[in-house]
Length: 317
Length: 317
Image: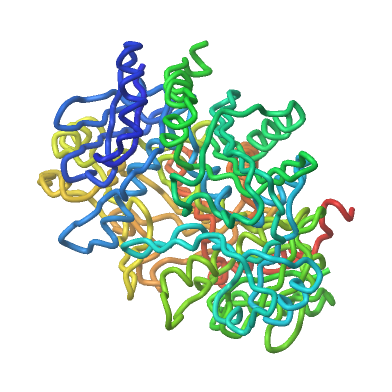
């Protein structure tokens, strides 16, 4: 039974997982869907038991029924770069590729595309977090300057975040979480939807990486008073030190409930921990990076991912 | 309690539903998300019970908690036409708009975006159809000319279909279902994923429109032998006559199972009925048109949609 890994060629984090699967003797097919149909072939016949057929690369041919799990890591878009009718070719290729994979019965996804899509919607995610019992900072999405002003008066000091995460432009733009000054002019809110959130007076940051039912906790040192490190993703890497941390049992229970409700097999949670020990839920990134945390905090995440991907399908247990 | 209808301004089919809702005294907010945030405003605060706030158009303001159902009809893309960073603005607007709506608790969707997305994948759809007991013609998705040749030898005569439906180009391209000649050269299959299907020797076509648990059946007259009307969508409208038809009980049972498994509230099913009375499943279009069939076959679909949208939310029953 083969593990199908969908990612681009330059993905060194995926290499860590592939090495582990190789060491365990688990067959791996690594494909960038962007190469379909240029150098990657597909033949899938609809049958009563799901699609039958094969994926063919320049290195090997894999039977569709032999796929036990699919890791959607950093895939390129299918049908990229066709000379004729590129938009339609991309759409046809996407539907052939993912339609076939979606139809494979009993395959385990990390993560299923629908679960990944749903989790990217911040307001939905905050609702799920709240429903499983997490503490969630007051958050506003708006295009109305007056609503932003009222929210600042009620909940300030605030931070401003991107609504969607990274921008699709090339090169991609990213908006670090930034402090909103007390005298901010919110007129610009009318131009594009804006996400404002109560600033959490945190003592330290937690990145909790979840793989199936295993949790890997990294935390920063306590923040010296006065240091402005709102968004560690953009801080000086030398200034933020990460080490392995502990997950309180009630947080673990809520994380498990979140993963179930969001139908995720992998998630990277960010929490801000305050002086009274409260873990404030900031975000769950269904495709968050883990290589950095594995390295600096000694967390065996890639091993856990390989183990999850290499486990038998439900129908074969 | 308000019905939220997401569609473009020129949607006369939506007008039919709005008229019925108006006659029933059900409040309606009709919005094209393409107008957000230019002329449509949003303010949504995350709270323990889901988003609280409002949508504001030039005509009215609607409380988010007052929305009972959402009809995703023919919406434009949020954030369309921003002057600065249009790609990012579109993404931020999409996430603010649909993230807020996705987080509304207890709201009934026709159809939920994730269910709509999943249903567009043809191979997945055929698997669901097969799993609920429908007869499905042999179907191949491939980029391999040799696989196409073998499939033609095993299952011909064949038809060729679009994998994805309509193309995203402007104006959109569409590929009618077309007959594949017996001596076809399949070399071009390598250029873009191709969908080939055994040609059903049909006597007549059925379009079954499903709204919640109500079914509206339209059928053509029996096809005179020799008339080539493979794809009625592109046939001479004068040559294809539609009238109301009956749904056999076993087909109705399977349709209900399909709607449940696909999590659809609305679906337009196409069947080809053969001489022995077999209904071959061709497709379920989660956003298929119904205005034409309402008109020519006298099927009260818009009334059923209005009734479904106007029904109380589950939490209020």
